[in-house]
Image (cartoon, rainbow, N blue to C red; front, top):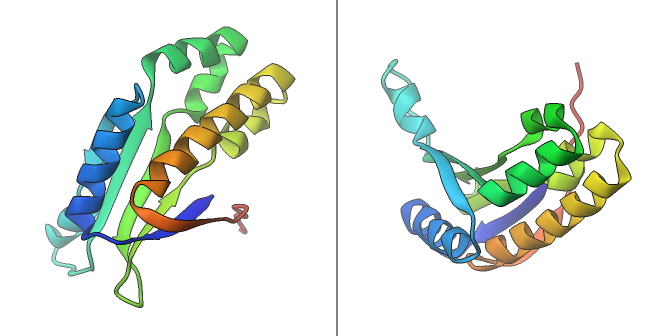
Length: 137
């Protein structure tokens, strides 16, 4: 996972990420105000927004490697206010989500997508860290 602290408010962060994504040929396929959904059931939380971003031509390329790899796209970003009241941006890595399909050409392509998303995050974050995602039961 890529992670960084934005220099902007949550809404400005999402706006800047959207503009940068579109300039790079990506499309925002979904933008979910997750904290509003939670508020609708009576729970108050800090700001949480989820974005799903991908390029249509890249989707077609992923499908050409393995149609079932479509489950691993789009790339999801989570913009939220963390415990220190910073605006944090976490982003899935294509190399992790697409890497599970064990196709070298697809893995190489996923690494290229990772570079795009690091560039995208750099439009709002001074530094970006990379942390492997480990899910425990």
